[in-house]
Image 1 (cartoon, helix red, strand yellow):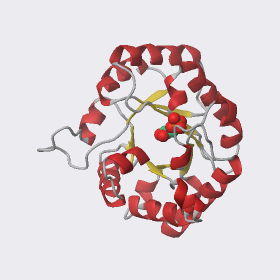
Image 2 (cartoon, rainbow, N blue to C red; image 1 turned 120 degrees about the horizontal axis):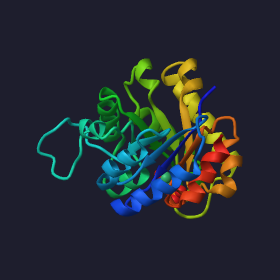
Image 3 (cartoon, rainbow, N blue to C red; image 1 turned 30 degrees about the vertical axis):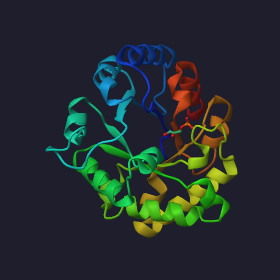
Length: 251
Ligand code: 13P
């Protein structure tokens, strides 16, 4: 059985003080969550403080991006080793906002995935179609290309550390969630692509999160779908109560 994974992507929100306050509330309200992997992904500036605040809890730390090189003249960038030093265990890669605003191609995402895995960071690899893709019946073609491109060349051993997040772009921050059926269809399709890329055992074990306007009111039904293994939460992760309720929906 796949263990559900719920991750909060805080995006460019929360100062250090606000981040510590939020995590302190989450810690207090989430007494028991051993049945779910819970990952908090604050901005880089708050990683260290959040890391300290969650020490000794079941909560895990993730970053929202990284560079593929280990060090060097890459102004403004952060390397996998720097994240590991802060006890980061996950990193979100290829989020649609990075693809749209920062020009990240599947090739770039693939380099980052390889670098993350080599540094023992678990990549949460985001894929998802735009509204015009869906309307034109291209959802599967777009998602397949992203999965194949972003995860090309990973060994079966490396796949064990991979998490995929299906985030339809039209559902992100819009309040317009994919229906459980729409999401389930794409999740099952992604699993079939992984089966073709690697093998059935990896396809059965890889965790695929749903992201896009997930909130307490719709989390249970979405996560209850057979191929949906948790959520990547944006807006609702900025509020302790709603994030904790989503985690509880996955328990
Ligand atoms: P929202 O939950 O705000 O729609 O964002 C989803 C997302 O992009 C998580 O990575």
